[in-house]
Length: 409
Ligand SMILES: Cc1ncc(COP(=O)(O)O)c(C=O)c1O
Image 1 (cartoon, helix red, strand yellow):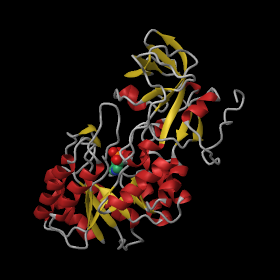
Image 2 (cartoon, helix red, strand yellow):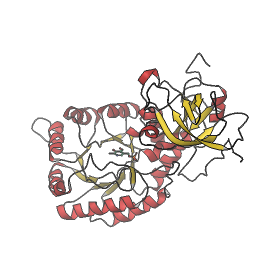
Image 3 (spheres, helix red, strand yellow):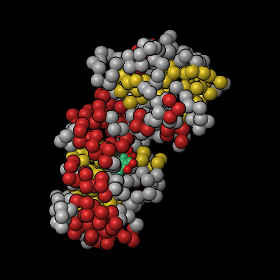
């Protein structure tokens, strides 16, 4: 095992009943991504069955081909892709998937390749210049494409979200009417989209954004065929426990029903985080302890970008046998690189006797965790293993699993 860093079995290896603790017993040298296909399946079925419209998976949250196949098999047929590389990847992995190019600022070459080589018909935009670019890139000689679905992205507030997406994209309110009218001329189907920011902690975020959509439709007096409420659906992290997803769905449904649009208009959403956060956790080893600081073998340049850069806390548990029954204490983490910035302040609560050689599972890293990994400083090589225990938190109707390191005071 210590010589063969792939010895734990690939994500596609057959499984018996295996938990993170079983993997820790093998004492892996590299961090191990623990994959929970059943959790991704459960999240996908939830959206497919209960969201009152169509759910597109936002590939950026976790582009793993294994995950893409799981989502496809669970009924997710449409994918929000933001780059030509994501388009090529999804097209290769899922040849029949419907791809929607939802980055509002695209290279003209990328639009042309998407349209002519990969059959992409759906594009978002937030300026007239981008609309002109799409029209140019998809024309055949002098003939404009007649099969485009064009979604105008509105700028909406991110005040209810933990990660803002309010500054970079979205049409200026003063330009929205002109843009909608111009896009209507070029589109087969016209849509409006927005993003309320990631990890939106209340459904009110969507109600308020839908009010902006209503005003925009009335002011532009255009027929709208698609309303896309974007991503932002939350997951559950320590200190960020949102209300049930059903309440988001019902607020969105009521707001959609109240819009001045035709009966045939479609409602879309683009969840990233909510579909894959529970899919993966990471098993790390403590290489050194200095007081209340633990030096672990994954960090800011690995799966813990958000823990380092925006101070997010993730659930943690010590996987040691026999279990520690020592009372909990608060720790911060240092990652493996030689960089002071490679620090996760936490605090992360673990039994006070945690030490070098111990293994810790860090949960809820399936979204924007594994996807952010770099090879900086020679780290970033990981193994993966499928496990079938439950994720450390869930929004999908399972109670949090009993902690293996139950602490007594
Ligand atoms: C256009 C678009 N759609 C969907 C998403 C996914 O958002 P989330 O992971 O918050 O659901 C993003 C994330 O940045 C995005 O930019």
